[in-house]
Length: 85
Image (cartoon, rainbow, N blue to C red):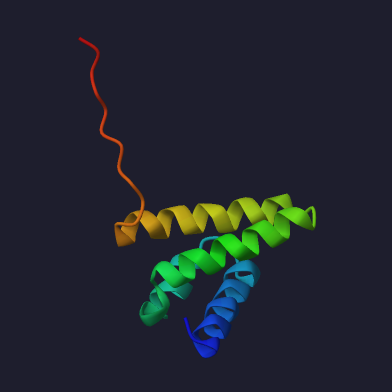
């Protein structure tokens, strides 16, 4: 990940944190070139930083966004339900 793309990830995360609730998909859709594993990693880094600064709500929000994005990108392992026999 280049220094420039990392800065772009952090700028996008900042916009997500400041936007009105419900506008997150629009913000993400406006930056399709940044929707990748690097963004997921940056989201988790910022979430951990927020958690250590006692900003639990922001940390939970970013982890939720990272999880959803991971699912959409196929990075999140899908656990298939096994029915008991």
